[in-house]
Structure formats: structure tokens, C-alpha cells
Image (cartoon, rainbow, N blue to C red; front, side, top):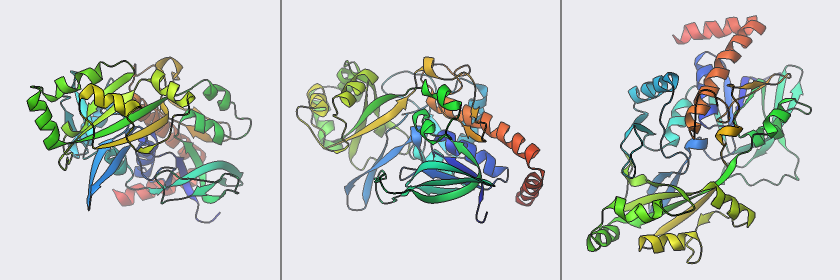
Length: 377
């Protein structure tokens, strides 16, 4: 097979980019395929055009993260030493030592993408077994915020690779696994909860006037929203280090999983910039006594895997040679809602096991890998 990668990774979130980074550093020729416009996954960020040549950046996924294990703490220390993450003093609640990537969350996964081929805006639809590896088919549409594909059209070849790692949500992984894979049964019990996240931008001068006139600080102003039933978390994005505010204060509001599920079932799941006097942003404005200048709503169809649904081990390997990692593993190591750490630990465990397997099964490739490592040292 010509122009064949050693490894194709599907999914450019923290799990996919961690495993790709570790294996590319070991000399493996890696390609990562991602359906969105950029990397991020659980650490996704978005740019919001506010005026000519200027955009606000804010995080739509995990607003920050902590460490429960020494392994992840060491990773954070490594990222911090490179200036990829920084300590964050949460202004709305005391949650211990928090960390955020800079200048926004998706920047961390972009740093991890160094050294491997990255193809965004492609949706992988099927894996076809070849004599010497895999052919990954799907659709390409790089210009849309999310690829809009007509799946009645026949998928075309995207890349070929000797090996495949799936680092995407369990539901999407099941769709890509080879027919008859026993992993499908295991993963079918792992179901994610949906979540809607709203980003609200307030002109800073107007907000400051409102706070002064009502003798409030930002925490007191947001307190009714934080306590509101149906709201899981509120994040003051503008308080994060190295955020360019451009004259606005940005607040993100994540609905509870129950409220989000109700919206999905009511089919009230469109996305985009809009303001609704009768919908959720309307009662936000009522609680805050101030109407946002901009409102953006984002739907996470696969937002979080409940702790009780997560798998206790680090990764899975299909008998056909397809490997799986993600934030729905490592339940024995990480408790609670720590998806970033779970994803990292899962990817690291898989990378170590995969590399050992690769070198044992393919001595010729392993030798060339060692030579590439020596040349890069």
C-alpha cells in the first residue's frame, strides 16, 4: 500500500491527541482525523466575531480541570512548564487547585498535535480491512463549523493506515467497529448524557454601570443563576488568564443533564447565535436583570458519561486490531466528573500497550522506529 500511515487516530479531543502525541514522539507515523473544524473535544473552544478583525474566545467544554492521580499531576506540571496551562483561581466558587489551558482550552490539544498529521473537517464513516491495514472512508467538508454531509452519497477514501485507534464517543465508536466486534456489546452499555451550553456576552461598560447602581460584585450578580434549578455550572470566562475581553464580559452557562435531555426530547436543539425572550436566555436575562448583547447556544450530544457507566479499565482492543480509548474509561482511577483526566489516563495506558504490541509484532517497523527516534534525539 502506498502513502500508508503507521496509525490513524479518529478523534482529536484530549484522548486522541494524547495518544497521537505520545506515539508520534516514539517515531510512529500518525494521522489524526477529526469531524469538527479544529481539535478540542471536551476542551473545545469557540471564537465569536464581535467586530472587524476581532473575536472573543471562550470555552464550551470543561471550564477547567484538576488532578486526582500523580500521573495526571505530572502531565499538568509538564504542560505548565511549557506555558500550555496555567493556574486558575475560580472567582465563582472555591474548588481547590484548578488549571486551564491558555489562551483557551483547545490550545492544549493543538500543542499536542505537533509532530503528527492532522486532518479536520472529515467525518469517518467506515473502516474497511485491507491486506496490509485499514482504509478509512468518509466525507470531507472543511469550511463548515460542523461537517454537513449527505450520507446517502457514497463515502470516499480519506486515508489508509496499518493500524487504527478510535478516540471518539462510545456511541460513535460502536458505529465504526468492524461488524461482529465483541466490543460493540461492551460499549453499547456506555451511554453519554447530552448538555446544552450557552455563552452570553455583556458589554463591559454597561455591566459595570449595572453592578455599581445595584451595589453588586460579579459573584453576587451571578449568584441567582448559579443557584437556579436546571443549571449545572456557570463560568466567568473573562476571569480566566490570557483571555482577551475586547470590552465584553463572557459568561458560559451549562444546563443540567436533566434539563438538557428534556430539550433534546422536545427537539429544541438548534444551534446558533440567537436571543429568545421566551426561551432559556430570556429567563437568564430576568435573573441577571440585564440582557446579553450576544447569545450563542451549543449542543453537546455526548457530553458526559456518568461515573457508574464508565469502564474500570484503561482501553479496549478488538480482535481485528482496532483499539479504543476515551473519557469513559479509568473508573477505578478517577472518580466523579473528571473527563479530562480520564481521557488522558486512558490514552496514556493505550499508547504504552500499543507501542509494546507494535514492537513485538512488527520487528522491522520497530527497528525503523528506533532509528527515527535516534535521528530525532
